[in-house]
Image (tube, rainbow, N blue to C red; front, side, top):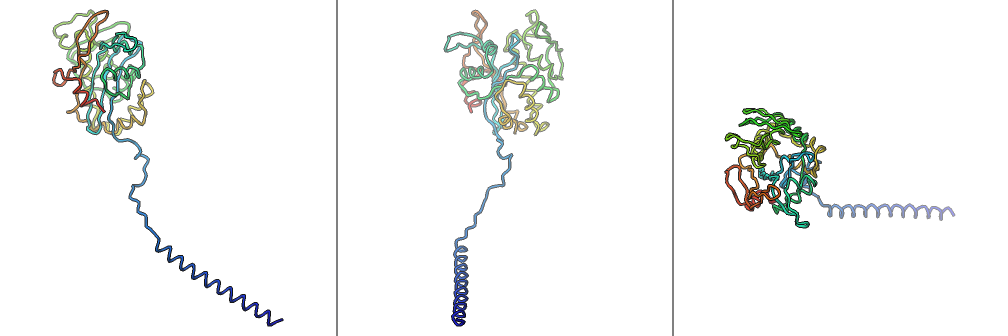
Length: 319
């Protein structure tokens, strides 16, 4: 019996040892095969940064309206195209008396009258249709928002060539000749003025104003050009997004903070030498109302010449 027990113990030890050796050899073999199949993965991408998701360029059209629906006149209405890849701004001013005919109800009216009864969004759609360009964004700066925008960037230096004065239930305008420092309140009064109190004009006055909206647009364009040239540069670099973001809650607009960030990323690099301003021109007619009938020409404020509207739109306002 003792011999049998010894035999069983020896056989068990032998089998355990043999199994261990075989397992060790198999493990070595597997390890060798694994090393032969190892692959090094190289990752060339930069580390993730949250700011990388923010767009850094913008190209598109924005309809800008300055004015209150509660007043009888819309102060300003224009399309601005910003192309940050070429550091270029283009302005197209639209007289409030521009005539249009509703294609559905066949009603004839003016752009200013249309806006007084409709939203900024619908007005952008109408302007887009008239000009045959895409206008994806719109913003209506009311009186407070416009004045606040000017004040956020401090005063604008602008030399007033003549004195202007007008007062009624809505307006109280009194700006002296040679006035050259405009805060937000005075800037608002400047763009509101377009006719004298008694509707009479001296020869000097007629060089700047003649009681029509087109003369108001010329002066407003000069002022806004001064604003852009003085405030869009190194002085406010990295501040534009935070400043303009303050205006969004006060405005009727579809510009989101994300879109605003892309719009403002390169404003300090605007090339003022290549930026241009235009105004829709046309035949003046009077039926039941005074209208300007679009004649497919724009007035180029830089050259003083009438130019093909299609050429300007295709080169500066098609995105």
